[in-house]
Length: 296
Figure 1 (cartoon, rainbow, N blue to C red):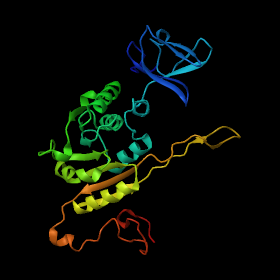
Figure 2: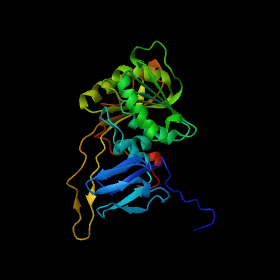
Figure 3: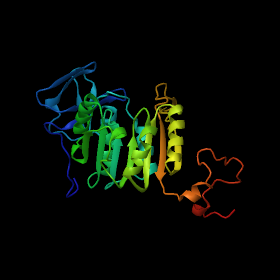
Figure 4: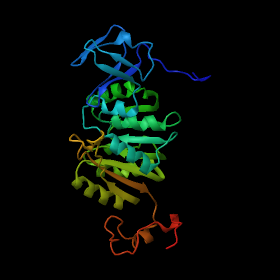
């Protein structure tokens, strides 16, 4: 072992992803008194204490189980669900598109199961914070458990509050407002009040009808740099001589809307084209020439 290298070992109450295969894996807190029964045999927690993450054990049926250290992906996918979760394929693009990073302050409207909250907190920690608001106490109780399990509670403040009808906004000058409601267009004005200049508005929209109403609300409330996306991921079964597309897969989950808060003088708004409907199909090039270094 290299000098100074610290090997992380599994202890009592450590979280472990017990991995048999991609469809059979279990995320649990280790307890030396627990024996977990599965179709591939019994997983005896007592046998894993003291082992390194990445090592393997055998069940009583001789099946190999790998002991993996959970990532935020695992916590999201294994979270208890009271509502539809936002999948990692969408979470990753949200982070890339908005430049999400440590130290930022995020407001989430609609906590749901807390999977999105968990992801946001995992990136803004240790200097940033997520303030999440919901109106359903049952959803909030489940979300709180998922957030605690992922170990990011200290970076999250959860409060029961109806942002739609709040007389005063709970935050201001935040970096991003993320909305996960069935009618996201109803909180666009409130989100604007909480955002800093150039701050991001992000919304999760399962249907195109929601996108249409949201796009209009964003335009009316002086947001720009709008983008509406759907992330498609197709997995590949890679085996020598047998590589093919996977028969299992995640289809449509949601659309994601992005926009940034700007301040346009009233006289200029009269001459600006609607950025959502402006036709660029006849332009010779839509390349950002400011970033291009290749001579045409």
